[in-house]
Length: 132
Image (cartoon, rainbow, N blue to C red):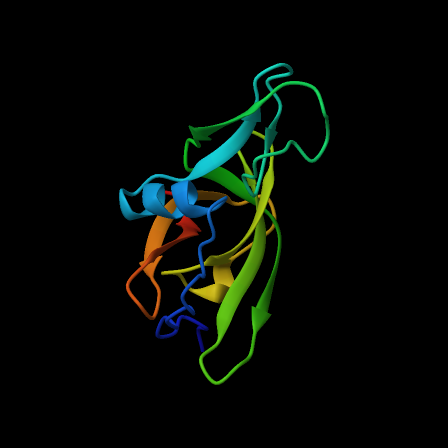
């Protein structure tokens, strides 16, 4: 039997002033990541200060929406779901859910692409689905 299931509705985020641009971009179907203007290094989640370097400023830039599954686990809750770390094409890893798929076919290294799933209050949440 396949583990493809009904999709759960994620809880709504609670934006604060530092995350508001991220959530506004999500409403437009864009995933933003942080980029250090001095080093060019990317980080996620985006925040006003680079967590790896105190040189340069942080700017928010759109991610490609492509990545690969770094690791994952199937959560056998009332409504099962797949939680994963996806390594973005740009380098950072993002904790997310893998949706719209048969969980039995998921594997580490599998290419995935960005999709948005509406939360309880309608705010789009970035998640991923197998590419192709």
